[in-house]
Image (cartoon, rainbow, N blue to C red; front, side, top):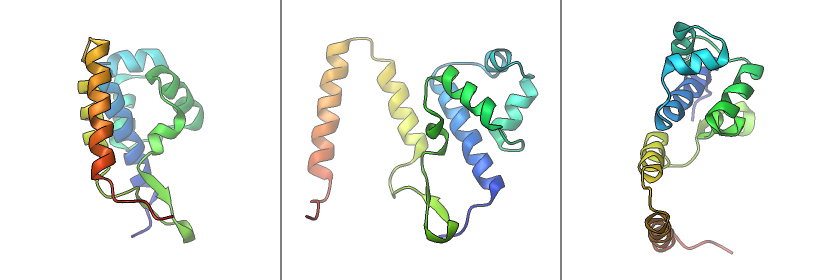
Length: 131
């Protein structure tokens, strides 16, 4: 795996920001107003051309209802300062699509049934754990 540059990590954080915003159905304009930014600044954050500062990332996480760590999920630190994808098969776009579809299910019983199904499939599809 190659070392991720600061620019690549900024782009990753921006993609996570956009994905979460879209999953919640929040416009860039609304997010910009909430954070006291211009619409174009939000676009720059989401493209990774501008870096989101720590304080702003904290406020952003609160508004989007996620922990700050959410923006870094999918990256891991490896020995020697390298970073790379978390695990094969854990694609953020797939996770967001699943989350968005799940949130659109209004009936709690249907959500519970779906969650039980997913857990069952995951349990049977996962390789056995080593002891």
